Length: 486
Image 1: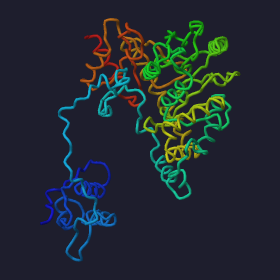
Image 2 (image 1 turned 90 degrees about the vertical axis):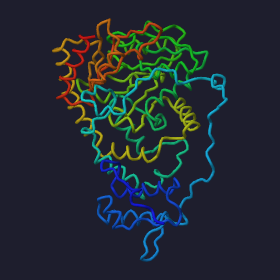
Image 3 (image 1 turned 30 degrees about the vertical axis):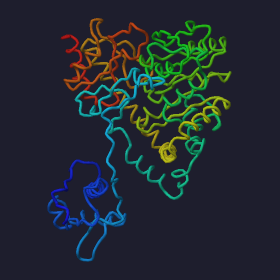
């Protein structure tokens, strides 16, 4: 008995071509055991009529499955499920209705109780998505990225695609970062002083594991990037929280027993404050006095459209005590998961060894694709395009904030892609964010960025990287009206 055409359906707005969807549908039917060895598939004519597609679409799908040994052809009789097709497991799955594990006892430590700012998966459906760190698809050069990815799949780059780098990185990507990216920040580095990471967060984790233990003290900003704070809490080191003002952290508040200082001087996270040069010099002097290391997270320097970026701490460091962390998440896209860290050779040697133990190296194909995208000039073109657009959006959001009487708590001098806001003290912005979600508005509550038991609840962040200029004004108006009604 053959397989009925009623078993098949396609989503017109689904992922991939209709041919690819049909291939996947048949393959999944075989792998799940719904389609059995020897069963006949519907004729291409009958299935095409049922699905409302061309007959050639069905024929091509069948031909591809035939080549992969999922199907077999029997002369003029048609297509059947092949005897060589993967066979689903015949054993019955074990039911675990009465698990007896005491998880409180089993866990040596917990990681799920930290602060996380949830980003709704359907944020693109929001009318007013003031979401931070996401990509506006209209600004991303998808066509040239695809071409670079295809080039990186070529025979010439076979090793970068398939090889095990062990503890090394793509030499083309290292060369571009050393010769092009870092000099923009005033940094001179050899390839031996650069390590590619799975984003900035991976770099921060590597630095914390190498520089800290339970007997050492780290100083971090307050408010700060919440994931960094939770990461350091789990490292069991001693922690000091340093209040920030409109120019970032204050060097003279760093405790005398500090071993490592974590800072975001170019765009303080989340206030976006820019640390002036004289305070950067004071921070370096304080670190030298304490013989402390500095981890500089320069996560958004490419977005300095309001003025030339200040020199990186690493570029001013003559002692080799600054570890510089950069990322392509904001300038390319967060899903790329590529960042880098720069430090003196002894530190990078240890970071390379630790990275190799945990994940060996970031995927070679992604590194080579990024190297092509950067070296062929597509990256610079995208940065220029993004900077112009973000500047227009920044002007629109500042004008709307002023028009509707909202309060800015912090705005970066150089640009960026967000503004730090302060609501009246009576407002809990976690609740405000929930109320606004029902009105198709997304904002990010500020409480997770603060440390300690009595966290302010009336701050919030407005990102403008993924919302069009035309929607900024109406979105800000909606926020202001909801605050007034709360």
